[in-house]
Image (tube, rainbow, N blue to C red):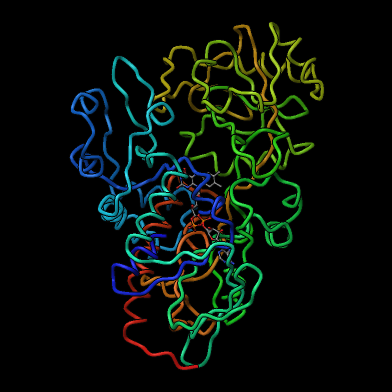
Length: 478
Ligand SMILES: Cc1cc2nc3c(=O)[nH]c(=O)nc-3n(C[C@H](O)[C@H](O)[C@H](O)COP(=O)(O)OP(=O)(O)OC[C@H]3O[C@@H](n4cnc5c(N)ncnc54)[C@H](O)[C@@H]3O)c2cc1C
């Protein structure tokens, strides 16, 4: 939709093909909280993005800063320095300008209190480089983008999917579509692919991500089945990025696919144990939004593809909203022995010993503080916990059954700085642009929360602008 808005404001007549019915429009974007990561220097930058925020709210909020360099470094560190440096510097360098552009196009944002900042001594202090979310979450963002695209004259065709790119020696000359079951052609020499990745395609998942990825919980939109990527590959587009891993999180073990409320992301304040009763990951390695996208994969490697998150009464008030409600698989008990019995599937002796060793290993001299990486850690364990290590000793105890859920895929198409899709001969494919999950090269193995929406916005804006310029300058040759 960013591409549609950008192309419209640059003089193109735009048709958006949306495979889903109108009530399911917006793909994965709809399923987000609308949390978006961008670089900013200080509170004045935030004021530019949320001009209607009250002075009093600014007074009790410490947004800190998150510079372009920090955003870039986060991308490098989290991807083990594999992120495409050209794309990464555009994403980080254009993020603030793109936020201002979104605001200009009537997209509204608010601070992410609660999930990204806890109130301590009267002040909300933000952490993790992500401070704002769209009003109305992902659904609100999608509605606002659709309204704006329509206001600028774009036509949106629902239940209409792209099935094939029309292509000759001069480049793209159109697209074959299926509109409500009827095959048609649209002739155009500019196409922007923004159809998401292949997380909802079981066959592609198993083919590229490997064993067990067919049985993971599937999050988000059921319409992101990869054909945007596939139809570009069919005409000689170059693949890029990390096809063998994906964004995958820890979430409810029994929730059906595509249902909202899957994730369970308060693990930094507790521990995770597998069916052998053993911890297997440093739950406090970093802030949640720097570890959550890779821990799903690690749970998939555990016996029976599952684990349990354990909390005691001391940290229960800190648990995120998703831990409440009827669709939550949890057991509660007054003793750890009883908790193990209620879990049932766990090796009880190992579990009790694991918690004993964990409790004894914690350096209690460092105070617990959820707003910073507090360094309250374990000593001498094979699997350390680096921050937020609290003893598990205060009843009632809670255990949440979790498994791996795939959010979106990282592998996709190679684009250049103009969002032009590259060919296997390392030249641009004339008239073909791509943005969002369909693009590969930014994320490898891990991902900083909020970077997905920003990537879609930054490259959508660039793709739309260049697609419009191309369509204005060229004539269609069939
Ligand atoms: C549950 C969940 C929570 C998330 N939370 C966040 C978050 O808070 N912040 C963040 O930054 N990222 C988040 N993400 C990731 C984020 O959703 C994506 O990175 C981003 O929305 C991708 O945007 P996109 O435009 O590339 O794809 P999408 O938003 O998925 O849009 C793809 C569109 O293409 C359509 N489509 C697919 N195939 C075709 C076809 N053949 N023809 C026509 N149309 C087609 C789909 O129906 C859909 O409308 C989350 C993802 C999920 C699933």
